[in-house]
Length: 418
Length: 203
Image: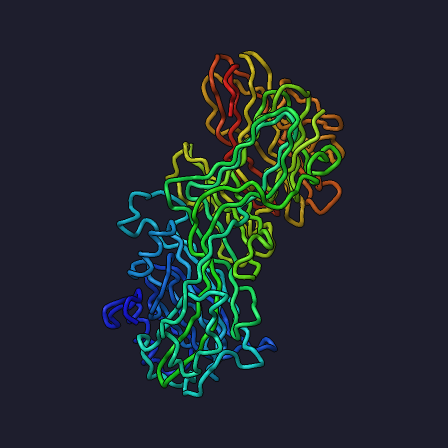
Protein backbone atom coordinates (compact mmCIF):
# COMPACT_ATOMS: atom_id res chain seq x y z
CA UNK A 1 0.00 0.00 0.00
CA UNK A 2 2.93 2.25 -0.54
CA UNK A 3 1.92 5.63 -1.85
CA UNK A 4 -1.40 5.55 -0.10
CA UNK A 5 -2.41 8.67 1.69
CA UNK A 6 -2.78 7.77 5.29
CA UNK A 7 -4.93 9.32 7.92
CA UNK A 8 -3.74 7.55 11.03
CA UNK A 9 -3.14 8.88 14.45
CA UNK A 10 -1.41 7.74 17.56
CA UNK A 11 -4.08 6.00 19.53
CA UNK A 12 -3.03 7.21 22.95
CA UNK A 13 -2.52 10.84 22.11
CA UNK A 14 -5.84 12.10 20.85
CA UNK A 15 -9.10 13.07 22.48
CA UNK A 16 -10.97 10.47 20.49
CA UNK A 17 -8.76 7.81 21.90
CA UNK A 18 -9.96 8.82 25.33
CA UNK A 19 -13.48 8.28 24.06
CA UNK A 20 -12.55 4.83 22.87
CA UNK A 21 -10.85 4.04 26.14
CA UNK A 22 -14.02 4.91 27.93
CA UNK A 23 -15.85 2.51 25.67
CA UNK A 24 -13.45 -0.27 26.45
CA UNK A 25 -13.95 -0.11 30.16
CA UNK A 26 -17.68 0.36 30.01
CA UNK A 27 -19.45 -2.26 32.07
CA UNK A 28 -22.66 -2.26 30.08
CA UNK A 29 -23.33 -2.14 26.36
CA UNK A 30 -24.85 1.32 26.59
CA UNK A 31 -23.92 4.00 24.06
CA UNK A 32 -20.55 5.52 24.75
CA UNK A 33 -20.98 8.59 26.90
CA UNK A 34 -17.95 10.64 27.81
CA UNK A 35 -17.10 14.22 28.54
CA UNK A 36 -17.82 15.68 25.16
CA UNK A 37 -15.02 17.69 23.59
CA UNK A 38 -15.92 20.62 21.37
CA UNK A 39 -16.66 19.16 18.02
CA UNK A 40 -19.16 18.01 15.46
CA UNK A 41 -21.83 15.78 16.90
CA UNK A 42 -22.95 12.86 14.77
CA UNK A 43 -26.12 11.29 16.16
CA UNK A 44 -28.24 8.42 14.94
CA UNK A 45 -29.90 5.10 15.59
CA UNK A 46 -29.59 1.49 14.50
CA UNK A 47 -32.83 -0.34 13.88
CA UNK A 48 -34.13 -3.58 12.43
CA UNK A 49 -36.32 -3.64 9.38
CA UNK A 50 -39.36 -3.70 11.65
CA UNK A 51 -38.24 -0.49 13.34
CA UNK A 52 -37.11 -1.99 16.62
CA UNK A 53 -33.77 -0.72 17.96
CA UNK A 54 -30.77 -2.95 17.60
CA UNK A 55 -27.27 -2.98 19.03
CA UNK A 56 -24.04 -2.73 17.10
CA UNK A 57 -21.16 -0.42 16.48
CA UNK A 58 -20.77 2.79 14.57
CA UNK A 59 -17.53 4.02 13.08
CA UNK A 60 -16.92 7.47 11.66
CA UNK A 61 -14.30 8.18 9.01
CA UNK A 62 -13.42 11.48 7.41
CA UNK A 63 -13.99 11.91 3.69
CA UNK A 64 -11.10 13.92 2.35
CA UNK A 65 -11.34 15.87 -0.86
CA UNK A 66 -9.06 15.03 -3.74
CA UNK A 67 -8.70 11.43 -2.70
CA UNK A 68 -6.77 8.90 -4.74
CA UNK A 69 -6.09 6.07 -2.37
CA UNK A 70 -6.89 6.29 1.30
CA UNK A 71 -6.14 4.22 4.32
CA UNK A 72 -7.87 5.55 7.37
CA UNK A 73 -8.61 4.80 10.96
CA UNK A 74 -11.83 6.11 12.53
CA UNK A 75 -12.09 9.58 14.01
CA UNK A 76 -14.99 8.48 16.11
CA UNK A 77 -16.70 5.34 17.29
CA UNK A 78 -19.54 4.16 19.48
CA UNK A 79 -20.60 0.85 20.90
CA UNK A 80 -24.36 0.99 20.50
CA UNK A 81 -26.61 -0.53 23.10
CA UNK A 82 -29.96 -2.19 22.70
CA UNK A 83 -31.78 1.12 22.45
CA UNK A 84 -29.97 1.64 19.14
CA UNK A 85 -29.07 5.24 19.88
CA UNK A 86 -25.64 6.71 19.52
CA UNK A 87 -24.03 10.13 19.50
CA UNK A 88 -20.43 10.54 18.43
CA UNK A 89 -18.58 13.81 18.79
CA UNK A 90 -15.64 14.31 16.47
CA UNK A 91 -13.36 16.90 18.08
CA UNK A 92 -12.66 20.12 16.23
CA UNK A 93 -9.00 19.71 16.92
CA UNK A 94 -8.76 16.27 15.38
CA UNK A 95 -5.97 16.74 12.85
CA UNK A 96 -7.72 15.02 9.98
CA UNK A 97 -10.85 17.02 10.58
CA UNK A 98 -8.92 20.27 10.54
CA UNK A 99 -7.22 19.33 7.32
CA UNK A 100 -10.47 18.59 5.54
CA UNK A 101 -12.26 21.57 7.03
CA UNK A 102 -9.56 23.86 5.73
CA UNK A 103 -10.24 22.58 2.21
CA UNK A 104 -13.99 22.83 2.47
CA UNK A 105 -14.73 26.10 4.23
CA UNK A 106 -15.19 24.48 7.59
CA UNK A 107 -17.41 21.69 6.34
CA UNK A 108 -16.35 18.13 7.00
CA UNK A 109 -17.86 15.13 5.25
CA UNK A 110 -17.88 11.79 6.97
CA UNK A 111 -18.50 8.18 6.10
CA UNK A 112 -20.50 6.59 8.88
CA UNK A 113 -20.40 2.80 9.04
CA UNK A 114 -22.89 0.91 11.14
CA UNK A 115 -21.77 -2.63 11.95
CA UNK A 116 -24.55 -4.82 13.23
CA UNK A 117 -24.03 -7.69 15.62
CA UNK A 118 -23.87 -10.25 12.81
CA UNK A 119 -21.14 -8.28 11.07
CA UNK A 120 -23.27 -6.84 8.27
CA UNK A 121 -22.95 -3.15 7.58
CA UNK A 122 -24.92 -0.13 6.50
CA UNK A 123 -23.02 2.89 5.26
CA UNK A 124 -24.08 6.48 4.82
CA UNK A 125 -22.65 9.95 4.35
CA UNK A 126 -22.85 12.69 6.92
CA UNK A 127 -21.51 16.21 7.19
CA UNK A 128 -21.03 18.88 9.79
CA UNK A 129 -19.21 22.13 10.21
CA UNK A 130 -16.48 22.62 12.73
CA UNK A 131 -16.10 25.64 14.93
CA UNK A 132 -14.30 28.10 12.70
CA UNK A 133 -13.33 30.25 15.66
CA UNK A 134 -11.63 27.49 17.56
CA UNK A 135 -8.85 26.81 15.12
CA UNK A 136 -5.93 29.00 14.30
CA UNK A 137 -5.93 28.47 10.58
CA UNK A 138 -9.46 29.72 10.30
CA UNK A 139 -9.02 32.53 12.77
CA UNK A 140 -8.82 35.06 9.98
CA UNK A 141 -12.40 34.20 9.23
CA UNK A 142 -13.58 34.87 12.73
CA UNK A 143 -17.09 36.09 12.61
CA UNK A 144 -18.29 33.97 9.75
CA UNK A 145 -21.38 32.02 10.46
CA UNK A 146 -22.44 29.49 11.45
CA UNK A 147 -19.90 28.49 14.09
CA UNK A 148 -20.74 24.84 14.10
CA UNK A 149 -23.29 22.65 12.45
CA UNK A 150 -23.87 19.17 13.84
CA UNK A 151 -24.65 16.32 11.51
CA UNK A 152 -28.22 15.40 10.74
CA UNK A 153 -29.29 12.26 12.60
CA UNK A 154 -28.89 9.09 10.58
CA UNK A 155 -31.02 6.00 10.84
CA UNK A 156 -29.43 2.73 9.81
CA UNK A 157 -31.85 -0.05 8.96
CA UNK A 158 -30.44 -3.53 9.17
CA UNK A 159 -31.03 -5.41 5.97
CA UNK A 160 -32.89 -8.70 6.06
CA UNK A 161 -30.29 -10.02 3.66
CA UNK A 162 -26.72 -9.81 4.84
CA UNK A 163 -24.74 -7.61 2.55
CA UNK A 164 -21.24 -7.42 1.29
CA UNK A 165 -18.96 -10.31 2.03
CA UNK A 166 -19.24 -10.19 5.75
CA UNK A 167 -16.96 -12.75 7.25
CA UNK A 168 -17.80 -14.68 10.34
CA UNK A 169 -16.15 -13.09 13.29
CA UNK A 170 -16.96 -12.01 16.78
CA UNK A 171 -18.08 -8.43 16.62
CA UNK A 172 -20.92 -8.51 19.10
CA UNK A 173 -21.50 -5.61 21.43
CA UNK A 174 -20.38 -7.68 24.38
CA UNK A 175 -16.91 -7.80 22.95
CA UNK A 176 -15.14 -4.83 24.49
CA UNK A 177 -11.64 -5.84 23.61
CA UNK A 178 -11.28 -4.03 20.35
CA UNK A 179 -9.20 -0.95 19.78
CA UNK A 180 -10.35 1.91 17.59
CA UNK A 181 -7.06 1.75 15.74
CA UNK A 182 -7.76 -1.85 14.81
CA UNK A 183 -10.34 -0.71 12.29
CA UNK A 184 -9.14 0.47 8.92
CA UNK A 185 -11.02 1.77 5.94
CA UNK A 186 -9.27 1.67 2.60
CA UNK A 187 -10.75 3.44 -0.35
CA UNK A 188 -9.48 2.86 -3.85
CA UNK A 189 -10.68 4.59 -6.96
CA UNK A 190 -12.30 2.34 -9.51
CA UNK A 191 -13.78 2.89 -12.94
CA UNK A 192 -16.84 1.47 -14.64
CA UNK A 193 -14.75 -0.53 -17.09
CA UNK A 194 -12.43 -1.95 -14.50
CA UNK A 195 -14.63 -2.57 -11.54
CA UNK A 196 -12.93 -5.39 -9.72
CA UNK A 197 -15.81 -6.20 -7.48
CA UNK A 198 -15.96 -9.80 -8.62
CA UNK A 199 -12.28 -10.40 -8.11
CA UNK A 200 -12.12 -9.33 -4.53
CA UNK A 201 -11.80 -12.11 -2.05
CA UNK A 202 -14.20 -12.05 0.90
CA UNK A 203 -11.15 -12.07 3.07
CA UNK A 204 -9.92 -8.92 1.47
CA UNK A 205 -6.68 -10.50 0.39
CA UNK A 206 -6.84 -8.92 -3.04
CA UNK A 207 -8.41 -5.74 -1.84
CA UNK A 208 -5.58 -3.33 -2.32
CA UNK A 209 -3.61 -5.03 -5.00
CA UNK A 210 -3.26 -1.83 -6.99
CA UNK A 211 -5.13 -3.27 -9.94
CA UNK A 212 -7.73 -0.50 -9.94
CA UNK A 213 -7.55 2.41 -12.30
CA UNK A 214 -8.60 5.93 -11.51
CA UNK A 215 -12.32 6.42 -11.22
CA UNK A 216 -12.81 10.16 -11.34
CA UNK A 217 -15.13 12.19 -13.48
CA UNK A 218 -15.65 15.93 -13.82
CA UNK A 219 -19.31 16.56 -14.46
CA UNK A 220 -21.64 19.51 -14.91
CA UNK A 221 -23.99 19.59 -11.96
CA UNK A 222 -27.05 21.72 -11.34
CA UNK A 223 -26.34 24.51 -8.87
CA UNK A 224 -29.37 26.69 -9.40
CA UNK A 225 -32.05 27.94 -11.71
CA UNK A 226 -32.52 31.37 -13.18
CA UNK A 227 -35.41 32.99 -14.97
CA UNK A 228 -35.78 36.29 -16.70
CA UNK A 229 -38.37 37.81 -18.96
CA UNK A 230 -38.22 40.47 -21.66
CA UNK A 231 -36.53 43.84 -21.17
CA UNK A 232 -34.68 42.57 -18.14
CA UNK A 233 -31.04 41.87 -17.47
CA UNK A 234 -29.78 39.61 -14.72
CA UNK A 235 -26.98 37.74 -13.06
CA UNK A 236 -26.73 34.54 -11.06
CA UNK A 237 -23.67 34.22 -8.85
CA UNK A 238 -22.44 31.03 -7.21
CA UNK A 239 -19.71 31.62 -4.62
CA UNK A 240 -17.52 32.84 -3.13
CA UNK A 241 -18.07 30.35 -0.33
CA UNK A 242 -21.23 29.05 -1.89
CA UNK A 243 -21.92 25.44 -1.18
CA UNK A 244 -23.90 22.53 -2.53
CA UNK A 245 -25.17 19.36 -0.97
CA UNK A 246 -24.61 16.63 -3.52
CA UNK A 247 -26.15 13.26 -2.98
CA UNK A 248 -24.11 10.09 -3.04
CA UNK A 249 -24.82 6.53 -3.95
CA UNK A 250 -23.69 3.19 -2.59
CA UNK A 251 -23.77 -0.43 -3.62
CA UNK A 252 -23.10 -3.45 -1.47
CA UNK A 253 -23.08 -5.84 -4.39
CA UNK A 254 -21.69 -3.76 -7.23
CA UNK A 255 -24.99 -3.89 -9.10
CA UNK A 256 -27.78 -2.40 -7.07
CA UNK A 257 -27.29 1.23 -6.10
CA UNK A 258 -29.11 3.23 -3.49
CA UNK A 259 -28.94 6.88 -2.53
CA UNK A 260 -27.01 8.04 0.48
CA UNK A 261 -27.12 11.31 2.33
CA UNK A 262 -25.47 14.23 0.60
CA UNK A 263 -21.94 15.44 1.03
CA UNK A 264 -21.24 19.13 1.46
CA UNK A 265 -19.03 20.65 -1.22
CA UNK A 266 -18.04 24.21 -0.51
CA UNK A 267 -16.27 26.79 -2.55
CA UNK A 268 -13.53 27.99 -0.29
CA UNK A 269 -11.57 29.32 -3.22
CA UNK A 270 -11.42 33.04 -3.78
CA UNK A 271 -13.36 32.77 -6.98
CA UNK A 272 -17.00 32.82 -7.92
CA UNK A 273 -18.87 31.93 -11.06
CA UNK A 274 -21.30 34.51 -12.36
CA UNK A 275 -23.82 33.81 -15.08
CA UNK A 276 -24.76 36.98 -16.95
CA UNK A 277 -27.96 37.59 -18.84
CA UNK A 278 -27.93 40.83 -20.83
CA UNK A 279 -31.05 42.77 -21.71
CA UNK A 280 -31.66 42.19 -25.39
CA UNK A 281 -35.20 43.57 -25.18
CA UNK A 282 -37.03 40.41 -26.20
CA UNK A 283 -34.82 37.64 -24.84
CA UNK A 284 -36.14 35.41 -22.12
CA UNK A 285 -34.30 32.76 -20.13
CA UNK A 286 -35.44 29.93 -17.90
CA UNK A 287 -33.00 27.10 -17.32
CA UNK A 288 -31.14 25.23 -14.68
CA UNK A 289 -27.56 26.43 -14.36
CA UNK A 290 -24.65 24.11 -13.85
CA UNK A 291 -21.12 24.17 -12.58
CA UNK A 292 -18.52 21.47 -12.63
CA UNK A 293 -17.79 19.13 -9.75
CA UNK A 294 -15.45 16.18 -9.43
CA UNK A 295 -16.90 12.79 -8.62
CA UNK A 296 -15.13 9.64 -7.58
CA UNK A 297 -16.15 6.03 -7.62
CA UNK A 298 -14.43 4.15 -4.84
CA UNK A 299 -14.12 0.60 -3.68
CA UNK A 300 -14.27 0.63 0.11
CA UNK A 301 -13.00 -2.07 2.39
CA UNK A 302 -13.17 -2.15 6.12
CA UNK A 303 -11.08 -4.49 8.20
CA UNK A 304 -11.25 -4.86 11.93
CA UNK A 305 -10.36 -7.01 14.88
CA UNK A 306 -10.93 -10.72 14.67
CA UNK A 307 -10.43 -10.74 10.94
CA UNK A 308 -13.47 -8.63 10.31
CA UNK A 309 -13.92 -7.65 6.67
CA UNK A 310 -16.63 -6.02 4.63
CA UNK A 311 -16.77 -3.96 1.46
CA UNK A 312 -18.91 -1.68 -0.66
CA UNK A 313 -18.64 0.63 -3.62
CA UNK A 314 -19.58 4.28 -3.41
CA UNK A 315 -19.91 7.36 -5.58
CA UNK A 316 -19.43 10.78 -4.09
CA UNK A 317 -18.56 14.34 -5.03
CA UNK A 318 -15.21 15.54 -3.80
CA UNK A 319 -14.64 19.07 -5.01
CA UNK A 320 -15.92 22.03 -6.98
CA UNK A 321 -13.99 22.68 -10.18
CA UNK A 322 -15.61 26.08 -10.89
CA UNK A 323 -16.87 26.97 -14.34
CA UNK A 324 -20.37 27.71 -15.56
CA UNK A 325 -22.71 26.08 -18.04
CA UNK A 326 -26.01 27.60 -19.17
CA UNK A 327 -27.38 24.42 -20.73
CA UNK A 328 -29.22 22.80 -17.86
CA UNK A 329 -32.81 21.63 -18.11
CA UNK A 330 -35.09 24.02 -19.99
CA UNK A 331 -37.67 25.62 -17.68
CA UNK A 332 -38.90 28.44 -19.87
CA UNK A 333 -42.45 27.15 -19.72
CA UNK A 334 -42.62 28.35 -16.14
CA UNK A 335 -42.19 31.99 -17.14
CA UNK A 336 -44.66 34.49 -18.47
CA UNK A 337 -47.47 33.41 -16.16
CA UNK A 338 -46.90 35.39 -12.99
CA UNK A 339 -49.86 37.65 -13.62
CA UNK A 340 -52.14 34.68 -13.01
CA UNK A 341 -50.12 32.78 -10.41
CA UNK A 342 -50.10 33.27 -6.65
CA UNK A 343 -47.14 34.70 -4.76
CA UNK A 344 -46.59 37.47 -7.31
CA UNK A 345 -45.00 40.86 -6.91
CA UNK A 346 -44.74 43.73 -9.36
CA UNK A 347 -42.04 46.23 -10.20
CA UNK A 348 -41.95 49.40 -12.24
CA UNK A 349 -39.48 50.80 -14.73
CA UNK A 350 -35.79 51.04 -13.91
CA UNK A 351 -35.97 49.05 -10.72
CA UNK A 352 -33.90 46.12 -9.51
CA UNK A 353 -34.29 43.09 -7.28
CA UNK A 354 -31.46 41.12 -5.68
CA UNK A 355 -32.07 37.87 -3.84
CA UNK A 356 -29.48 36.22 -1.65
CA UNK A 357 -30.71 32.68 -1.48
CA UNK A 358 -31.32 31.19 1.89
CA UNK A 359 -33.87 28.75 0.61
CA UNK A 360 -32.29 25.50 -0.47
CA UNK A 361 -33.86 23.47 -3.21
CA UNK A 362 -32.96 19.94 -4.14
CA UNK A 363 -32.59 19.25 -7.83
CA UNK A 364 -33.25 15.61 -8.61
CA UNK A 365 -31.13 14.07 -11.35
CA UNK A 366 -28.80 17.01 -11.06
CA UNK A 367 -25.99 14.89 -12.42
CA UNK A 368 -25.36 11.36 -13.59
CA UNK A 369 -22.05 10.02 -12.35
CA UNK A 370 -20.81 6.61 -13.41
CA UNK A 371 -24.30 5.81 -14.64
CA UNK A 372 -25.98 6.67 -11.35
CA UNK A 373 -28.23 9.71 -10.95
CA UNK A 374 -27.47 11.94 -8.01
CA UNK A 375 -29.29 14.86 -6.44
CA UNK A 376 -27.88 18.29 -5.73
CA UNK A 377 -29.04 21.05 -3.46
CA UNK A 378 -27.71 24.56 -3.53
CA UNK A 379 -28.54 27.30 -1.16
CA UNK A 380 -28.48 27.91 2.56
CA UNK A 381 -25.83 30.38 1.58
CA UNK A 382 -25.71 34.11 1.29
CA UNK A 383 -23.34 33.53 -1.59
CA UNK A 384 -25.87 32.24 -4.07
CA UNK A 385 -27.30 35.42 -5.49
CA UNK A 386 -29.82 36.23 -8.21
CA UNK A 387 -30.22 39.73 -9.52
CA UNK A 388 -32.62 41.31 -11.97
CA UNK A 389 -32.64 44.80 -13.44
CA UNK A 390 -35.87 45.77 -15.09
CA UNK A 391 -35.86 48.03 -18.15
CA UNK A 392 -38.08 50.91 -19.13
CA UNK A 393 -40.26 49.56 -21.91
CA UNK A 394 -43.12 48.35 -19.74
CA UNK A 395 -45.06 49.76 -16.83
CA UNK A 396 -45.18 46.52 -14.86
CA UNK A 397 -42.67 43.68 -14.54
CA UNK A 398 -44.05 40.61 -12.75
CA UNK A 399 -42.11 38.13 -10.61
CA UNK A 400 -43.51 35.19 -8.67
CA UNK A 401 -42.28 32.52 -6.31
CA UNK A 402 -42.42 28.88 -7.33
CA UNK A 403 -43.86 27.64 -4.06
CA UNK A 404 -44.06 30.68 -1.80
CA UNK A 405 -43.59 34.41 -1.83
CA UNK A 406 -40.41 35.47 -3.69
CA UNK A 407 -38.70 36.17 -0.40
CA UNK A 408 -38.88 32.54 0.66
CA UNK A 409 -39.55 30.60 -2.55
CA UNK A 410 -37.18 28.01 -3.94
CA UNK A 411 -37.19 29.61 -7.38
CA UNK A 412 -38.40 32.96 -8.71
CA UNK A 413 -40.16 32.95 -12.07
CA UNK A 414 -40.55 36.04 -14.23
CA UNK A 415 -43.01 37.68 -16.62
CA UNK A 416 -45.09 38.76 -18.26
CA UNK A 417 -44.52 42.47 -18.56
CA UNK A 418 -47.44 44.82 -19.05
CA UNK B 1 -30.47 50.40 20.57
CA UNK B 2 -30.07 46.73 21.17
CA UNK B 3 -32.06 43.99 19.58
CA UNK B 4 -33.80 41.71 22.06
CA UNK B 5 -32.93 38.09 21.45
CA UNK B 6 -35.02 34.98 21.73
CA UNK B 7 -33.66 31.56 22.45
CA UNK B 8 -33.84 29.01 19.67
CA UNK B 9 -35.10 25.85 21.33
CA UNK B 10 -33.24 22.66 20.63
CA UNK B 11 -36.21 20.62 19.51
CA UNK B 12 -36.84 18.66 16.33
CA UNK B 13 -38.00 20.74 13.44
CA UNK B 14 -41.26 19.45 12.10
CA UNK B 15 -41.79 20.89 8.66
CA UNK B 16 -39.91 21.83 5.56
CA UNK B 17 -40.56 25.45 6.30
CA UNK B 18 -39.30 25.19 9.79
CA UNK B 19 -36.23 23.44 8.39
CA UNK B 20 -35.69 26.39 6.12
CA UNK B 21 -36.21 28.67 9.04
CA UNK B 22 -33.68 26.72 11.02
CA UNK B 23 -31.11 27.17 8.31
CA UNK B 24 -31.86 30.86 8.24
CA UNK B 25 -31.59 31.07 11.97
CA UNK B 26 -28.28 29.21 11.92
CA UNK B 27 -26.93 31.26 9.08
CA UNK B 28 -28.03 34.65 10.18
CA UNK B 29 -28.51 34.48 13.87
CA UNK B 30 -26.23 31.87 15.32
CA UNK B 31 -26.83 31.05 18.94
CA UNK B 32 -28.96 33.65 20.62
CA UNK B 33 -29.82 34.37 24.17
CA UNK B 34 -32.83 36.25 25.47
CA UNK B 35 -30.67 38.17 27.90
CA UNK B 36 -27.94 39.01 25.43
CA UNK B 37 -27.83 42.79 25.28
CA UNK B 38 -24.45 43.02 23.63
CA UNK B 39 -25.46 42.89 20.00
CA UNK B 40 -24.63 46.16 18.31
CA UNK B 41 -27.48 47.92 16.62
CA UNK B 42 -25.60 47.86 13.34
CA UNK B 43 -25.80 44.07 13.18
CA UNK B 44 -28.85 43.06 11.21
CA UNK B 45 -30.01 39.68 12.39
CA UNK B 46 -32.92 37.45 11.93
CA UNK B 47 -33.94 36.17 15.29
CA UNK B 48 -36.28 33.28 15.07
CA UNK B 49 -37.60 30.61 17.33
CA UNK B 50 -37.99 27.83 14.81
CA UNK B 51 -40.29 25.81 16.97
CA UNK B 52 -42.83 28.42 17.86
CA UNK B 53 -42.25 31.42 15.66
CA UNK B 54 -44.60 31.04 12.73
CA UNK B 55 -42.93 33.53 10.39
CA UNK B 56 -40.07 32.14 8.32
CA UNK B 57 -37.41 34.66 7.44
CA UNK B 58 -36.61 33.48 3.93
CA UNK B 59 -34.04 35.03 1.64
CA UNK B 60 -32.40 38.42 1.80
CA UNK B 61 -33.97 40.80 -0.69
CA UNK B 62 -32.59 44.04 -2.04
CA UNK B 63 -34.85 46.35 -4.02
CA UNK B 64 -33.47 49.33 -5.90
CA UNK B 65 -35.53 52.16 -7.31
CA UNK B 66 -34.14 54.91 -9.49
CA UNK B 67 -35.83 58.08 -8.34
CA UNK B 68 -35.07 61.77 -8.14
CA UNK B 69 -35.06 63.38 -4.71
CA UNK B 70 -38.58 64.27 -3.68
CA UNK B 71 -40.15 61.25 -5.39
CA UNK B 72 -42.44 59.23 -3.16
CA UNK B 73 -41.60 55.53 -3.47
CA UNK B 74 -43.03 52.28 -2.13
CA UNK B 75 -41.09 49.10 -1.34
CA UNK B 76 -43.28 46.02 -0.91
CA UNK B 77 -41.42 42.91 -2.03
CA UNK B 78 -41.39 41.52 1.50
CA UNK B 79 -44.61 39.59 1.88
CA UNK B 80 -44.73 37.50 4.99
CA UNK B 81 -46.87 34.48 5.63
CA UNK B 82 -47.95 32.83 8.84
CA UNK B 83 -46.73 29.24 8.75
CA UNK B 84 -48.17 28.46 12.14
CA UNK B 85 -51.54 27.03 13.01
CA UNK B 86 -53.05 30.03 14.72
CA UNK B 87 -53.37 33.76 14.07
CA UNK B 88 -50.65 36.19 15.01
CA UNK B 89 -51.04 39.85 15.87
CA UNK B 90 -48.65 42.46 14.54
CA UNK B 91 -47.46 44.91 17.16
CA UNK B 92 -45.02 47.07 15.28
CA UNK B 93 -42.99 47.27 12.07
CA UNK B 94 -39.97 49.53 11.78
CA UNK B 95 -36.84 50.00 9.68
CA UNK B 96 -33.26 49.24 10.62
CA UNK B 97 -30.50 51.70 9.82
CA UNK B 98 -32.22 54.35 7.74
CA UNK B 99 -29.65 56.48 5.95
CA UNK B 100 -29.65 60.21 6.57
CA UNK B 101 -31.19 61.75 3.49
CA UNK B 102 -34.01 59.21 3.39
CA UNK B 103 -37.38 60.21 4.78
CA UNK B 104 -39.74 57.53 6.01
CA UNK B 105 -43.17 58.30 4.64
CA UNK B 106 -44.80 55.46 6.50
CA UNK B 107 -45.15 51.71 6.79
CA UNK B 108 -48.43 50.16 5.76
CA UNK B 109 -49.60 46.59 5.41
CA UNK B 110 -52.20 44.77 3.38
CA UNK B 111 -53.68 41.40 4.25
CA UNK B 112 -56.44 41.48 1.67
CA UNK B 113 -56.61 38.01 0.12
CA UNK B 114 -57.78 39.21 -3.28
CA UNK B 115 -55.35 42.04 -3.89
CA UNK B 116 -53.93 41.99 -7.41
CA UNK B 117 -50.28 41.74 -6.40
CA UNK B 118 -49.22 39.93 -3.28
CA UNK B 119 -46.77 42.78 -3.03
CA UNK B 120 -45.88 45.84 -5.06
CA UNK B 121 -42.15 45.33 -5.07
CA UNK B 122 -41.42 48.85 -6.20
CA UNK B 123 -43.50 51.87 -7.14
CA UNK B 124 -42.93 55.59 -7.56
CA UNK B 125 -45.89 56.49 -5.42
CA UNK B 126 -46.90 55.86 -1.85
CA UNK B 127 -49.20 54.28 -0.97
CA UNK B 128 -48.75 52.00 -3.94
CA UNK B 129 -51.58 51.37 -6.36
CA UNK B 130 -52.50 47.75 -5.83
CA UNK B 131 -56.13 46.97 -6.73
CA UNK B 132 -57.87 45.14 -3.94
CA UNK B 133 -55.36 46.19 -1.31
CA UNK B 134 -56.55 48.24 1.61
CA UNK B 135 -53.34 49.46 3.16
CA UNK B 136 -53.52 50.04 6.87
CA UNK B 137 -51.41 50.73 9.89
CA UNK B 138 -49.69 47.49 10.97
CA UNK B 139 -50.32 47.73 14.72
CA UNK B 140 -53.03 45.30 15.68
CA UNK B 141 -53.34 43.63 12.29
CA UNK B 142 -54.11 39.92 12.59
CA UNK B 143 -52.35 37.61 10.15
CA UNK B 144 -54.00 34.24 9.73
CA UNK B 145 -52.21 31.01 8.83
CA UNK B 146 -51.22 30.55 5.21
CA UNK B 147 -53.28 27.39 5.13
CA UNK B 148 -56.46 29.41 5.51
CA UNK B 149 -58.16 31.49 2.80
CA UNK B 150 -57.67 34.64 4.87
CA UNK B 151 -53.95 34.08 5.16
CA UNK B 152 -52.86 32.39 1.96
CA UNK B 153 -51.84 35.66 0.30
CA UNK B 154 -49.83 36.73 3.33
CA UNK B 155 -49.23 40.26 4.47
CA UNK B 156 -47.52 42.81 2.27
CA UNK B 157 -45.25 45.23 4.09
CA UNK B 158 -45.20 48.42 2.07
CA UNK B 159 -42.56 50.90 3.11
CA UNK B 160 -42.80 54.48 1.89
CA UNK B 161 -39.49 56.27 1.41
CA UNK B 162 -38.41 59.53 -0.16
CA UNK B 163 -34.90 60.74 -0.85
CA UNK B 164 -34.35 64.27 0.31
CA UNK B 165 -30.88 64.55 -1.19
CA UNK B 166 -29.20 63.03 -4.28
CA UNK B 167 -27.22 59.82 -3.86
CA UNK B 168 -27.45 56.11 -3.23
CA UNK B 169 -29.44 55.82 -0.01
CA UNK B 170 -30.83 52.82 1.77
CA UNK B 171 -32.46 51.21 4.77
CA UNK B 172 -30.87 47.95 5.91
CA UNK B 173 -33.68 45.92 7.34
CA UNK B 174 -37.31 45.55 8.34
CA UNK B 175 -38.12 44.68 11.93
CA UNK B 176 -41.44 43.03 12.68
CA UNK B 177 -42.70 42.62 16.23
CA UNK B 178 -45.69 40.40 16.81
CA UNK B 179 -47.54 38.30 19.33
CA UNK B 180 -48.41 34.67 19.05
CA UNK B 181 -50.20 32.65 21.67
CA UNK B 182 -49.33 35.08 24.43
CA UNK B 183 -45.64 35.37 23.54
CA UNK B 184 -43.85 38.23 21.86
CA UNK B 185 -41.52 37.77 18.91
CA UNK B 186 -39.33 39.85 16.72
CA UNK B 187 -38.06 39.06 13.23
CA UNK B 188 -35.59 41.27 11.43
CA UNK B 189 -35.54 40.79 7.69
CA UNK B 190 -32.11 41.87 6.42
CA UNK B 191 -33.64 43.44 3.33
CA UNK B 192 -32.14 46.50 1.71
CA UNK B 193 -34.46 49.22 0.38
CA UNK B 194 -32.49 51.52 -1.87
CA UNK B 195 -33.22 54.75 -3.71
CA UNK B 196 -30.68 55.99 -6.25
CA UNK B 197 -30.51 59.22 -8.14
CA UNK B 198 -30.38 58.53 -11.90
CA UNK B 199 -28.29 57.49 -13.74
CA UNK B 200 -27.09 55.29 -10.87
CA UNK B 201 -28.31 51.80 -11.92
CA UNK B 202 -29.22 51.06 -8.30
CA UNK B 203 -28.17 47.41 -8.35
